[in-house]
Every structure is written in C-alpha cells, then in structure tokens.
Image (cartoon, rainbow, N blue to C red; front, side, top):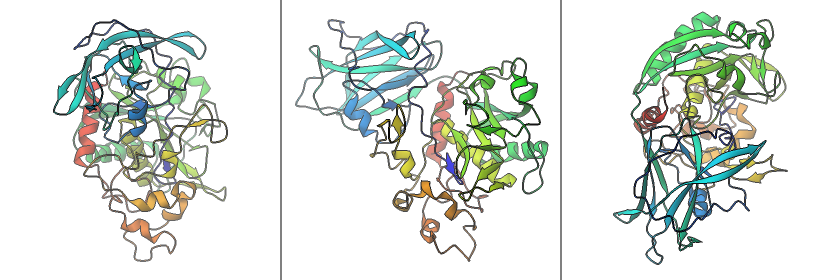
Length: 435
C-alpha cells in the first residue's frame, strides 16, 4: 500500500486458511513417523513465510518449532533451512495441512516428517508439493517427540517451479470513472499503462492488457453499476472484490486483476494489495485495487494524473508478486491479527526493517518519520524541484527514492525502477504460480 503515496497493505494472515481440499504431496528425505508433534495451537499461529522472501523473518525463526505457516503452491519444490545449533540434536520437521471443520475452525492433518540434510553449516529440509491450489502448511520441529529447543537462526524458505515468466493484465473498471487529472480516458490510460508496465517489468514478459468493465461481467455484473462511484471498503465489505475476481472465468489463466475505481476508504490511500497474493486467473485472491482519487487529510478528494495512477498499479503489483517496501514504515511493522491495535495481537516483525536485498538501499528516515500517519507531506513537490518542501527534506536524500517499492510517491516518478534482485524474485514467484 502507498500512503498517498506508496502503500503497504497489512497482510491478512488468515486469508489462506479456507482452501482445504488438496491432493497428497510427495516429499524427499522422509523420516520414520515414530511421533506426531502437532503445532502448538494453544497459541495463536500467525507468522508466515513466503517463498524466496529475503527479509530476516526473525519472528518466524523464533516460532518455527511450535508452528508457523509456509505458503505452498501446486507442483513447486521447496527448501526450508536454518543454521545448525551444534549444542542440540538435529530436529525433524513435521508438516501439517489444515482442513475445515466449519466456520472459522480448522484442524491439522500431518503431511510428512522430514529429516534434514546438512549443507555447509545449515539444516536443509526439501520437499515437493502437488496441492490443488495455493495454501499454507503448518510446521513443527521436534526431537524425540518434544518441541526443538535449539537456536533457529537465519531462516530461509525458497521455492522453484516450472511455469514461464509471462503474465497478462485485466484492467477492470469498477463503477463510474472520469478522465484522469491530465485528461486521459480509460482507453488512453490502458494503452499507456501497458507501455509503462512493459518498461518497468523489464525482466519478464507482459503478453497483453485486457480492458474490462465490472458491470459487464456475467453473473455478478449487476452488483457493480456503471454509474455508481465505487469506493473500496465502503461500497461493499469486500475491499478486494473477491467475488468479482472469482467471476473472471473467461480471462486468461495468467492474468493479473487490477481493479480501477473511484477511490479507497482511508486517508492518503491510493492502492492496496496483499503481500504475495500468489494466484493468477479466476481466483478470489487475485486482486490489486487502485483508485483514481484519494482522500486528503482535510477530507478533500484529489483526482490523480495518469502517471501516478499507473505507478501505483506497478507498485501494488510488486507487492502482489512478493516484494516488500525497500524502506519499512511503521505501518509495515505494526501489523495485528484478530483485530486492530486495541483488540488484536501484534504480529509485525521488527527484524524486517529491510527487505533483505543487497541492491535496494534502506532509508532509516522513513521509519523514524512515522510517515505512514502523515504521508501527504512529501508528495506535493517533485524530487527534482529545487523548491523542496521545508518539512521532510530528508526524504529526498533517501538512497532508494527511485525504486518502485519505495513507500512514498513523488511527482517525478518517470525514472523509478525495480532492482535486479527484485526482478529475480518476481520471476521466481511467476515460476511457482500456476498459469
């Protein structure tokens, strides 16, 4: 998510818990199933590892023995690894599949127990999966039927697959849309959007862009009237339009859905996406949401130019494919499960103040500035404008200012780009998403 600027969306940690009907999976390095050590469900299991995420994920390391979630995809191969603790015996990894027992409740069924191989000074657990769709598996680490008490440091979770690095885009107009602030209608915007997407996603292939209108989608179109200004989070409880995304049955299997609408509920929010949505085609989780307007802190609605709209789409689709912000905001870290800061449990990982990539510099000022609560301070001026705003001058010295995943938008965004490592992660994500 971008605050008026780039956005960071709190990942819904329970969104993958309801896809439960799967085929069996074959794994390597099987161990003798002489004990069953289920994840400790007396505690809330909230930490999740995404394939090829390079952030430190220290909270996952600290909790993997008693249970975390691993995102898995059909047909992909995975490796979970961490440093050897020479003071303890090598632990066995047990993997568990969730299945629904009604409502929000689920139980766990063991998939397999794995012995590690030792590579260098690291335990490595390898497995292949043939689920029917993306889901999560739960972990436990044990020695002799007891939870592993050794140190788990420098955890890594990688995945590889055989799918190509092509994708298409469905630009889906939801409700009433006007021309952009620079006078472009939807068709003109879509042509420019495809051009810029192809330029910025330089390491993969974007086949084509399909312009669609929500009110024309069979079975559900009547719920999205063309004359109604749609506001995500207000016009319906379904901010990410999951029902509409699922209804895109006639779209290509490799299409990414970008829903374009009037605006999004909240101050300074231009767009939203889940981190590592992990699905393409007709799927309720396949959604990037972008507004043509945003609400300023004084309540005024501001219409955006085409350049900001398109770069918001590119930034949010980066989150969709698994990219974190290059510089972490307070909102990135203050994530809650089961409610908000008053009613939920904080699950943000304070070790993840960087995305872990060596070619995406980190700007400490972003975290110190508490920027996510006052994101409109730094968007009025171009980063090349000599008359920079007095408040927030430091932001123009951030070394990642021109990275697409920088969490604040500046007017001069033509030169922003993905780094090589970011493009490698996007390619690896495409390789494991069925399409």
